[in-house]
View 1 (cartoon, rainbow, N blue to C red):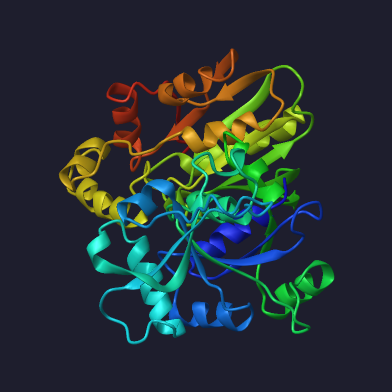
View 2 (cartoon, rainbow, N blue to C red):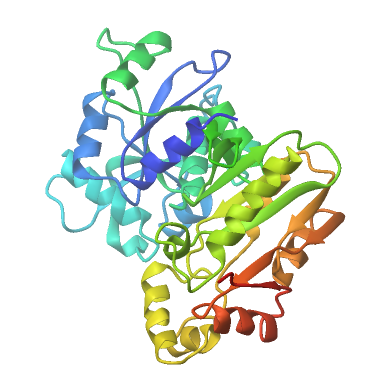
Length: 401
């Protein structure tokens, strides 16, 4: 799967509009879409300028009922062939002027998208059209209404969107190359309904965002970056055939102090280097490098904990004293990335029993390999605490004189 969807979702999170394109077999057009919660006055103005001016707020049927806006139906007329669920128009009851300006409509949209807003805060009719998304989204109806709600949900912005059909200066609806050129001119991400549906149906919702060769002092590897809908990233470093038996695998949490500044307070750099060397020697392996500095508490609090360790606390006591958990890491994202590889059986290279337990839940054949750590006067207490209190299986190598 391409990174098109994640780029589009990131744009929505940043408050920028995207284009959702339909198939040639359906309407064969594109809609400008923005998050109803985050849409700005400027974005609405842009959307109105490049459309017929019909600005629609997409919401769920339940939300439409909460706002006491009725879906428009009639027994005397035929329905349009796309079965579009238009609802009553509305606008904000207060805080606007005539209601038609881009500024007024943007305010009305944001107001209606706010979960705390009630029907008493809006009036109807007004200058914003409404559309009810099918309760099953794209599984119930494959239209721009449901696609825009799906995109906003995937971006973590609820199921409310604001949409317009992109109009051509010739007077028609913009399609094909004209739509692509428009997107390129204004640097707008385009995603198709098919791509959104495929991504939504992917249980893991992770994609390989980028990939490159990585020559290192240990050997040549392949490096890739995986992303999820939360914007999190995991770096994967791989070598050789990953479909064989007993593939070496390691989850390694980022350690800025150890791996960049070569701190002697931990064994992180040594463990990372040993595994890269291990992969090179076996001509096979997979390293997942996780953004979990300080066992997940972040670099700022890690340094705060370090200062308490300077005063005699161990690594557990220091975390608890600053109000942080002993280990704040979560392996869910890493496990989803691991599932994307064709691994049959692995050699999990770790001293951490929590990692063994987590990986064993998704891979049946797991052999555990423990890496040794070199002790010095700065990390001795740290390693002893991990062994005695965190049950890490660490083989100690004495520091060379």
